[in-house]
Amino acid sequence: MTTKTNLPIVRATSDNVSSARKTPHQDAIKPAGKTMYMAAGSGIPEIKTVLSGFVIPHLFDFKVLFVKAIGATFAVATGLSVAFGAPIGGVLFSYEEISTYFPRQVLWRSCLCSMVAAAVLKELNPTGTGKLVLFETNYGVDYKVTHYLLFICLGICGGLFGGVFCRANFMWSNSFRQLSFIKTGPVFELSLVALITALLQYPNPLIRDTGDIVVQRLLVDCNKMKEDWICQQEAKLTGKGTYYAWLISGTFIKLLLTTITFGCKVPSGIIIPAMDAGALFGRMLGQLIPDVNPGILAMVGSAAFLAGVSRMTVSLAVIMVELTGEVNFIPPFMIAILTAKWVADSISSEGIYDLSQRILGHPFLDSEQALAKVRKVRDYEGSATVELLVSPASTMEYSIIPIGPTYRILASTLQTKLDNLETRGLSDADLVMAQDA
Image (cartoon, rainbow, N blue to C red):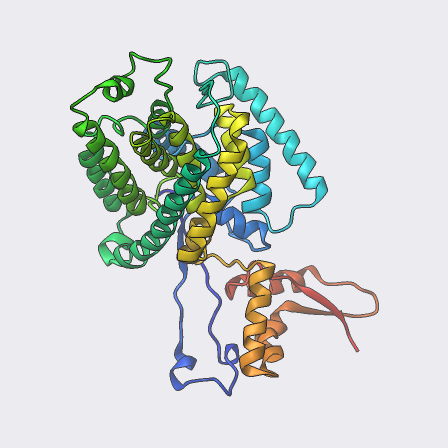
């Protein structure tokens, strides 16, 4: 709430709409400003917007850093998201999901930063294990060719989960969060979600703990940990109905809670909740297959469900290897991840981060989308394409600074131009210096 900021919006003037398309009421359009909570959310949609060339004022203020650091600490402690050591996967994630422009110089700088961060994290040893691997596993068994069908099945289910989640979260954000008492009362919404979360999660012993602990428990190898509660339940010859009920209900509860939670005004993300749902489903599927370790299916399932939500591919496979230490399971990871992406794309063409940008109203247009829109307008409207790509006359007037033969500009002129751009909500626009004819 302390990072709430009101941002200006581009003014709607008569020349914003061509005279051929103008309707009588458009001259009176007076759009309101945009309200943002700078420290809320995962921050990924905002970073994607900034790296694509736009400006979000005050996003990188020290106050936002301070508030987000404190908020993220509490969010991690309550299981909404988590930080983990995956330096190579982090670099690939930046390349695949975050940046639209990633030159070679940025690549080695990112690797250097990730290396330093990983070294510091290992020294701080927050998990008490002395290792970067958060969900270290060592099943000691290999998978068979027939198990590829299971990995494909997990990918299909992960894609269905991701596609349904993206659509459901988008609808939830455009319906429930648009109610006046929710839109103007983020604290009330968060309190309501926290209450529902406590009522649904606490009775289930599998999802009672924080998200990272849930994943860690579900990846347990019962061939080595007989005393674990999950292993004791699975070792029973009869009376497993309650345990199965916990697995099934846990999967659906995670889907529901993640749908209504993602987008709340707290600094949290989607990675661990999606992995929780995938691990629960994979462990449940493992109870039906007699010749496979349920922990393996939980591990691959967590990757599949996260792929369905985020649509990450190569970076996610590397992250999973770094998190678990299971290099031999790269093929299963890739099979499940790619299958999940293809299935999820058929349900919802955009991943959760792209949809989040649309919900938040952040400007973003990558090269493929830009070309697609230009082709669409050209096909339907012919010569009008060029007209639509040209800025309105008033915007051009505010954006162009005429310069004489001396190439000198008065500081007062430059300041006036910048003030005019900011007033019109064009703080991310450029100033063009043109020589007088």
